[in-house]
Image 1 (cartoon, helix red, strand yellow):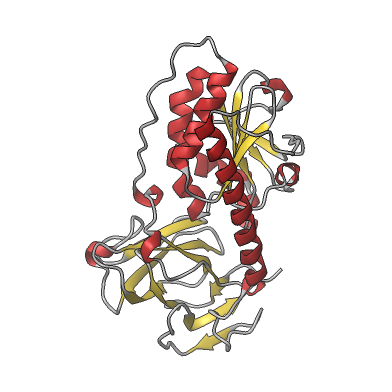
Image 2: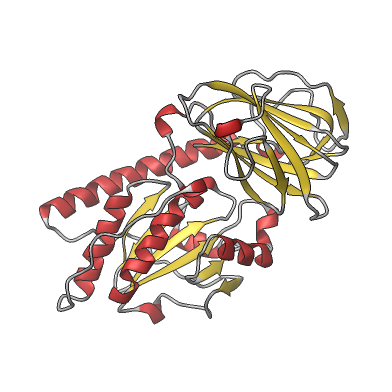
Amino acid sequence: MTTLARRLLLALALLASALTGLAARLDTRDGAPLPIEPVHPSLAGATGWLNSPPLTLEGLRGKVVLVDFWTYSCINCLRTLPYVRAWERTYASQGLVVIGVHAPEFEFEHDPQRVRKALKDLDTDWPVAIDDDFAIWRSFRNQAWPALYFIDAQGRVRHHQLGEGSYAESEQVIRRLLAEAHADAKALPAMAAIDARGIGAAPDFEHVRSSETYLGYAHADEAAPRDVLPDRTQRHAPRPPRLNAWTLGGGWVQRSEFVEATEADGTIALRFHARDLHLVLGSTDGRPVPFRVTVDGHAPGPDHGVDVDDQGRGTISGERLYQLVREKDAVADHTFEIRFDRAGARAWVFTFG
C-alpha cells in the first residue's frame, strides 16, 4: 500500500473516530450512558507479554480497562504516553487497568528486548502485550497508532480515540466508566496531573507544514529524490532540498524501510517547516554512531532537540526515535542536515511536531 493510500485510510479512520467521539460527547452532555460499540475484542494472539503474565479481558471483568495501541518509535504514541501514565497512576486504585498493545511498524520493533528497554526508558510499568502478528489489532478492528479503547467493567468497548488529542474527553470517559462500575465507591480523585515534557511535550500543530516522511522505498513518495535507486549502493553529490523533500550526500543504499550510509560523512538534508523535527535512527551493527546536525548550515544552539547538544552533536545509541530540533522562536522554513561520522548509520522516517 502506498504512503498516500495509508494516509487517506488514516484520515478516514480519524474522521470516523471524530464522529463517534462527537456522539459520545453529546451523550455525556445529556447524561445518557456512553454507547456500546459493535466490537468484541480479545487479547488472544499476543506473541508475548512484558511487565505481566498473559491477561484476558474475561479475567479483567469488574475492572475498567484502557487499551493503548502503540509502537515505541512513533512520535504520536510517545506524546500520548504522559497522559496514559498519569491516568494509570491516578485511577489504578479506583479499578482502572491499563494495557499497552505494542504493534510494531518497523522490523527492528519486533525485537522484544528492544521493546523491554523502551519500556524502562519510557517509565512504562503497566502490562504490555506484544502484538507482532497484529492479532489483537485485528480483533479491535484498529486502524491507527496510537489508539485508545475504553472497556467497561462488563467487557464492552464504550469509547475509542484514534490518534493524539481529546485527552480531557478521554479522562472523563475513564471517570464515567469507573463511576458506573463502582456506584457505591468513594469519590473519584481530582483530574490527573499531566507531566508532558521533552519528546512527550504537546506538538505545535498550528505551525506544522511538514508531514511524516519515510526514507525507505516501501513508502517512498514525492519527497524522495528521483536519483535514489532501490537496493543499489550509490554516491550522491550533496545538494539543497526543496521544501518538504530530502536529499542524500555521500555513499548510501536505500532499502525497503530505511537508508543506510555506506561510508563515513554521509549526509541527509531536509527542508522543513515545524517546531520539532524527529528522525528514527539506528545502526547496522548495533555500535554507536556519532553524528552532527545543522540548521541552515549552523549549529542549532538553543534550537537543539533533546538528543543533541547546542553544537548539534549526538550519538546513535540504538534503534529509536531521536528528537533533533525544537525551535524556540517563531517557526519558519529551515534546512536541516545530519552528518554521520562513520558508515553503518540507518535512518527510517522523519516526523514533526
